[in-house]
Image 1 (tube, rainbow, N blue to C red):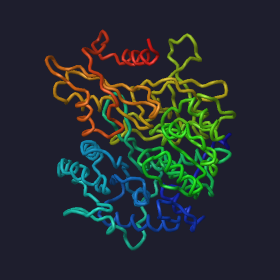
Image 2: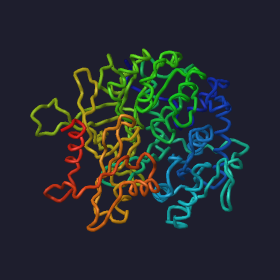
Image 3: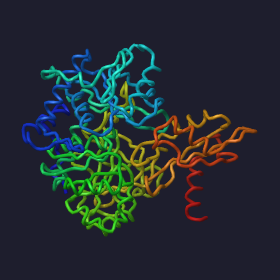
Image 4: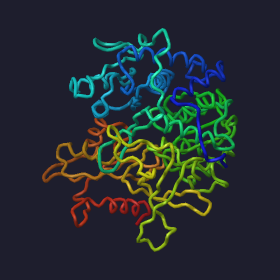
Amino acid sequence: MVSPAVVQTVAVNLADLVRQAAKDAPERAALIAGDRRVTWSELDRAVDALAAGLAAQGVVAGHRVAVALPNGIDLVTAMFATVRAGLVVVPLNPESPTAEYARALEHVRPRLVLAGPGSVEAVRSAVATLSSSDGDGPRPVVVAVDAPAQAGELAYASLPGSGPAAVPPRDPEALAALLFTSGTSSAPRAAMLTHRALLANVAQMASIEPPAMRANDVVLGLLPLFHVFGLSLLALCARAGATMVLAGRFDPEATLDLVASEKVTNIPVAPPVFVAWQSFPDLAARLASVRLLLSGAAPLPIAVADAIKASSGLMVHEGYGLTEAAPGVTSTLCSASPKAGSVGAPLPGVEVRVQVDPGAEDADEPGEILVRGANLFSGYWPDGVDGPSSDGWLATGDVGYLDADGDLYLVDRVKELVLVSGFNVYPREVEDVIASFPGVSSVAVIGVPDERTGESVKAYVVPAAGASVIPEDVLAFARDRLARFKCPAAVAIVEELPRSVAGKIAKARLRLAEREASLGF
């Protein structure tokens, strides 16, 4: 059920959500990270101080600040401070290898890069590969967080200023964040998300009735905050003035212990968490404080959802979204009656329609999903290409259908995108890496079903004439050059790849062969 579809918010800058929470509930815990607890008023003051410190480094509205930090209070402070200062935050995976950082930094050219102990060496190496200037600014300065700063770098502890940051122009169409996503015909691109888009989606989610998040909720912050799903939930938490418990790497037992000790009420996670928990016999007792389970970022198998409900008594609500929609589009929380296999009805203020091929015999058959709403991005960096059409519709590349109640069902993807635990993997990026391995003649990468991660990456490799290619060697080569979730889970050595009459690799045949093999054909 939802409230009226006209969604508004008084916030103009994303960081206004923190300011308002500090006014409404100054002493309520905003963030819990291990033994550290920060109230909303303390967080607001820290955001102010860091925003002033960033401005003192000579950056001005519109400049980019990249952040490669793990989930923690420093990451949250840095992201909100960046946007409060009128700058553009670029969240990066803190576990990326040097090559990925180099590609991202070259593309967006941030003025500063905040990096922690686990990422600072890779970031330094990436920065060293960049030209000193490319017309869009100098080589970025590394800001060392909880790590010694080297010559020419800044220490994070020295950044916070003593006064409030200068107030930047309050333009809802100003760029707030660049979030890397993937397409199917080019390298990963940075989606341009304005304050308007991010705040609109937060307001849309906040308009669900009964509320998905309340002021007295305690939310599990397990999702990585550099991912759009985690970032949007953090913003929704700020809007509600709720508390987020920031968790480290997922461990089935330890995370359940954290849920119990902090009396967590809301658990928004990706499917692998529920896959790991489905067999726990005492799940109901361990989730005694929980009122809401949310799954997103990748499809959740119906059998897993059924197992969780049977063992805990709690329904797992699902949703559908994409980075370009900041990210929420549908949710079973918006359905009159949630149905198995459905990702729910559109959020208030979001329109969804299915565009069926004009040559289709049945108008009700699946088609490409189109989305329209104030939450849509402004295109891809730097020139806003491939954004919504002139009438506001965005073609998602996903295939689905709407039932008579307006609930959406996902069928397939027009794109070749692979979703690993909710993270986008662009096949060509993986293919380019493997193609550079000695002795590889050609390669094709597809996504295959994986019970733990939803999908995993599989590479089909054709050796060059006379060459011997060992799968384990290819995997090791890829691990040194790609983020862990992008690395193939399997490499198959084949004599040739299926091709169309035009000579293009026919990946559909590879996917069909995988499906038939899984069925024992």
